[in-house]
Image (cartoon, rainbow, N blue to C red; front, side, top):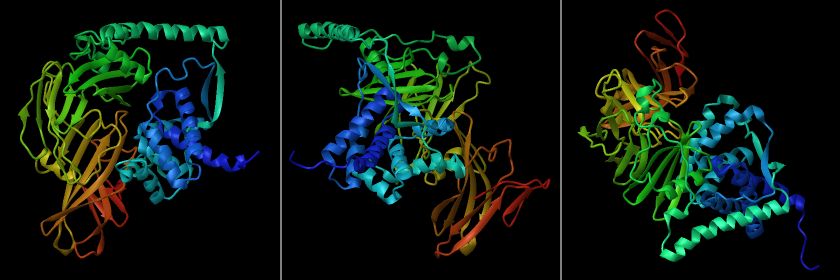
Length: 520
């Protein structure tokens, strides 16, 4: 035999690393079988085609393929066995769910940074080579996720291992049954194609009828649980069964609740909900995309589209009045058409996020007062509040350049200007405490020092704390401490606290002598 035989043991670890990279990059909604099979296919193809490539280049090529992969709903339909990755760390289910909730580039960064133990610079190089537009943002999203698990974050690993699979025989493992299934599938395909050939264009009647669940109009008036389960379906494409069927098949969930099906400009949009998740399916010029996100609170609008012209939102059915404003502009009333408002303009400036702000009112739901929400770049705007001098819009406009956009859903965003201080070298400072609460009620808290000197304002943030009452009505006392860089370049340790709190060195106490957590 001519040529050479490579040592299979030398290929074992590179192959395993590539499988992990592909598996974690692929979204969980594809299903365990399709996800693990496609991960192995991508890894095998990368090694066979690019085995002699530099390791960084090899991973960039694989990652590019994984990010572009669009698993078909029928993948594995006729397989004799079902392949499921083995659960090897059942205690890490919570960590796995948190990892699957971050964007795909951040999951890829995890595989490279934690499983392969590559340097952050090398990880960024792989991400950039794969076409990821913001490698630093992906690393930051991963770091923010890991902060929730504190010092033990690096000890956690995904619960299931795609390189250790379990095989389950299906009921139709006998060849005649598989053949019958294949014939049925082909027959359905023929039935779908014949009308298309006869009319010269696709027929919506050819697609299988979708059967989503729907809430009855006015269902929210019959319950005190005003959540998404009470939202009736809306939109001008509710009769397009083919579109809705494609959305359901793309998600792969049975009998989801239909929230919206409509056309906004050149994009057809379908919103589906099931098991505390919301899927947003878009078709633009024949190209489908699907995003699955945690279910927000029922009082939040849901973002349908985001374009350079602005964002469109689907309102809760009980909201009858809406107004909008950018952070640096005035309020203007928005017309509501079939539950949809927009486009709401988004002001982009030097990497800062500028809202928009949306003010809603539901007169039939006590107390019927207006409430304000802010778009943080996720599926649903967050209810926003502010305590301190000045207006809410002015305060959040300043924080827009001081805080990164959240990488996960936010239910509530609150800010509190708890202290104005004089800083060294003639600078002035204002301390804010910011709390972002996710749909589960867990809060992420950090303090921000905005320092102004010579007409220039800089922001210095403390680390993020999780699982506390800090910066909420349940913990009204707050203290913070950071290293601040003065205009001269010299660094100072500066601290501040809310009224009634005394800071002494590394400790802080309230008026009753109780210890107060110092955010650093």
